[in-house]
Length: 278
Length: 296
Image 1 (tube, chains in turn cyan, red):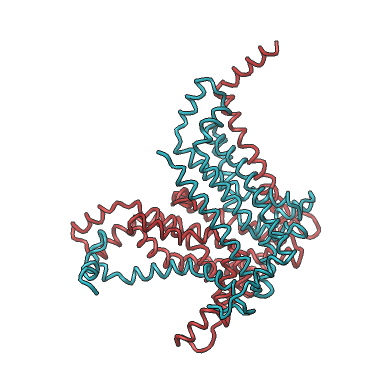
Image 2: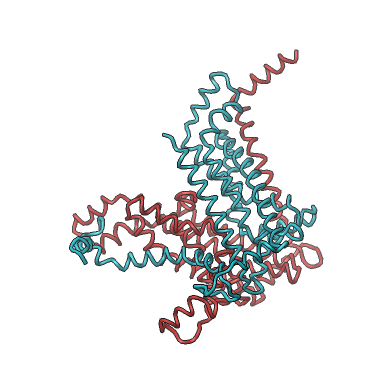
């Protein structure tokens, strides 16, 4: 060990008076916890390229057979198409309704606005199983079970709180006087919103659209109860498959899902970075 | 005439109160959505839970919840599992958040990606990963045997152990985020002052740093505990039928027994408990910290 390393070990860590050497265990623990968070998900990726029926790590032989079994299966493809459609429609519905609500309720400042805002956030704390069976019970009566429309409505309700939170926090850091200026120059309220406010919160709106898509795409419990038949989602079919046995096809599907969601999040991040002009 | 009326209407619309109401109206579509797909269905379940098997108002489902020992077991298991998961999350999450909060911001943000990654990977993907890793011939068992830590493959999944591991993995980021935020906000000069006044590192930590990190810790622990109460997917897949939490019982009441009354009563109790805990805690904790930190 070089002298420089040793001196770093003996130096106190920030304001704690404890030298790094005395709390190496803490650093190891932190690394172990991050590994625990990240590694299990990532390990699925190499496993999906295994040639073996049994999921071994590292795989002894590589192959694409599980991808063939995924992309070659009409049932899996249909479920994937349903999930993507539901995700896109949810992103549109939840982002539109959530952004309108966040803006209206934030600016309105009526006393009732606070109550409505609170109500819009409740889907976060209501146990999802209760939403699942409740929506199922209601949908049976209005014939929305196993329909794309029903699924999108329920998923949009689950995504609205996220959109409202993200957009509201963007509005909080936005100077509303700019809109007042636009209006004093003759712009109507809708015009001022579209031309002045919206361009400045568009990143938050785009981020919330990504989050809404992922909320729907990854949602399991409501999908188990209200999606089925030709409109069964990917997650519903995965859940049922995992209940029976460990089918390595799931590893291939998981890898595709990891890549898709990571790409979307990355996109949102990049948008955010290039959009920050101060 | 018409344009006069329109002008008049436009003038009226500029009236502050009318405009506030119009703006308030922008919230109504979202409100309608949440009402139709959540408030009404859940209210309907409330109603069902008070209907007896003969269709008349009765408390029989609630009476059964109290009388049947199996329900008491399920509630106890749910609370125990939630408490254990919360405790493990604190034990693992506190040191992690502590180290992260002392790293330079750039490096901490990089590590944060690791913490946040579970947020954008499907719960099914992660549950599947644990199924594979923890099975008899899985990586953990073969590694443990090769290193001589244990001789026989351990039963790590399809039981309580697997459920706890999976749940901790899902809930840990919910604890770390608000905790990290509140630790970052602590003014390091307090620690210097403590040292100046003669406190050793241990005393300075427990008397100064730890109390200041408590708001973030309690907010994180609260959200972890409440979300755990409603878990369904993880116990269903990693518990192998042996771990039955309230949500799993609700699902099987519907799927196997078609007993809406019993399922609704269970659901109502679950919701009321979660809401009561949240409201009780709201007196102690600032709730806006729950979702503190950055959106992923």
